[in-house]
Image (tube, rainbow, N blue to C red):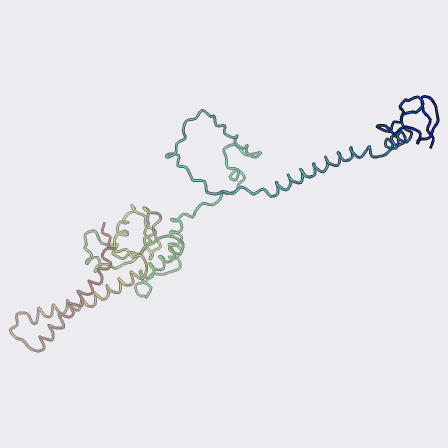
Length: 323
């Protein structure tokens, strides 16, 4: 390959030129000037035409897109995997009388009250305006008691000649009250006499009736005359007698009491009759026979049975109400 010096236009071979200088420049042997080698110039043109000049911008654009996709994916994963807030303890109710707010310079701005729906006046119940009844509250215990007493009276008949007497009726009504969640007691006594003037033994002897007392609250109670289906409130005429007598928590207690009371009537009545016979036919007589000795032994045994029966009834003595 021959090369022509651009300065002196001398043509010579590449081998006759001095060694290549920096950046492909050659030194002419004739004029001594330096010029660019045709080979180097050709390489420079090829480099300029080579598409590599677009590589760097393309790499920068791709890098920016990769970073953007990575940041967006990271934000998405953090949002989906972030734990929900958990309540570690229930908020405690604050008594306004015990925890009065402390004065503060910070002004508390109350959120505005929500405006009522169209057609509803402020401060009124939209349900009531719409003609619908408000949600029902807890059932009224007095109404339940009155309903049970009335329905029971309509479906049952009280008779002294049959087996279904006042005690059975009181137990039945007591069971219905308790089933409906109302605390109640069965009462035994005498609603026609002044129990306040009696002692416990007299109250047992004179008891001839049973009824129910229902407790509406810790302080309020009413009596139910089960033979007539009547609810008796304190303060009503002749109501005091229905809150005196002997109080029983359940049917088993009053049944046991009634059984012991019947035993007393039989045993003690027999002992009384034997005592009267002894006083009439033995006391003052100056004779002692085998028959008299046996009669005395039977009298003493009957009197002991009567005493033991009363002792058994002392179990219910603390349940007597005389006020």
